Image (tube, rainbow, N blue to C red; front, side, top):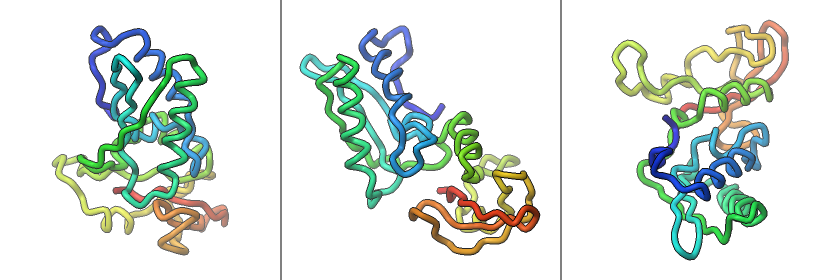
Length: 177
């Protein structure tokens, strides 16, 4: 599972409501995917004075971190569940393995090729992200596995730019980490 939470029976209604609200908070750099589907929301903890939302940024230098934190706080308060505070937890480091299956489909529907798995299906061992970047990337528009990388970087550092050889359309690929 991509999020770390208390079992549903042990959570309060307020925490459950907060999770429902967070499913609607979109990533500012890829507004087709929520922060929960992206896997960066790790926990929601109820305290006497506030809800604490624990977030692991996609990487430590992510320029959207402050916007995401503010969007999370604003959504919790707007839903009448606040006040809220956002805590960043950098360990363990975020990985693209935390993106939910629904999040991967939303990336594809938005025109971004989702990342490949960082684990070998045969052995379960981690595979080098460098090796994964060298693999074929399927076009999110036509599904062709014939694509060429144009640039190691796309509109953000976490994406690379490709062009489909079959349909000739450019697209971004969310890099596996």
